[in-house]
Length: 311
Image (cartoon, rainbow, N blue to C red; front, side, top):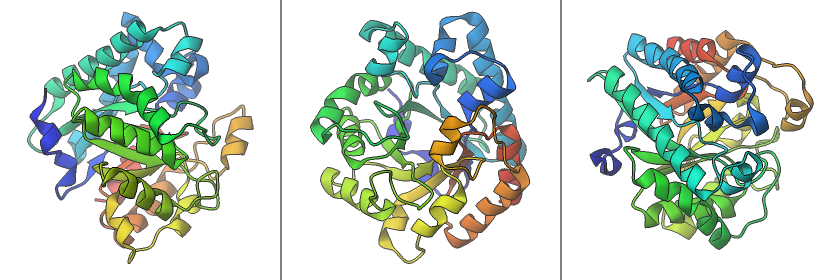
């Protein structure tokens, strides 16, 4: 339903920015109640939709100010059957929510996009379980599980699907296969622990290479999210062939481990200027990193600092 699926703008030379940590921003900065860390529930009220519009418009303004492309990620990280059931959403309700999320982003794109600031709309997929604990699905089970959400996105104006905070390869393989079956480009973003490895001990290199091998390189590209640069820098290597597949970073503001963040009752926003400098060094060493945003603890201050540092 969109010609961009065959020609994603972010695959061309140039820098794209993304948003920060949506859920941590809404909960800690704006006092919004997000049960089970699910921001998609806001789509069910006009007040909630207006709050989401205001959130996205901060990043749209940053992208326009800096003349950068923007990734608009839908607020559907929790909009899958397991989490949906906890919130009272059945299959029909989740389909409606996933479609509504893209309609909202497409409205924003039509209002904000310019030739200098192309906007890519992505339907976001999150892990079936806890993003910080290793899952247990087989690749076939993961493909079946995530297929309905991907199918919902495929019937909208979404340009692609973007899977975030994955921590084991079988789920990533299943998502990539389900997206390919529905002719949807996808990105796969892994999260790592403080040692730069996935929670089960697999290296980031092995994770990327395994998914590519098992899916005939179905993902359009890979990313890292929900970890601080000090956690994953050790896993990167400028000369390694797999690094050509790594195109984006959405880092945490905090240097704390996932376990420490889980136990924390306050938000660690880190230092936006320092994070921007770290992104600049990453870009200098790995120029293939062209999609830059934030995850837990980050907000528009961090993304603005990243844009300024990487100018």
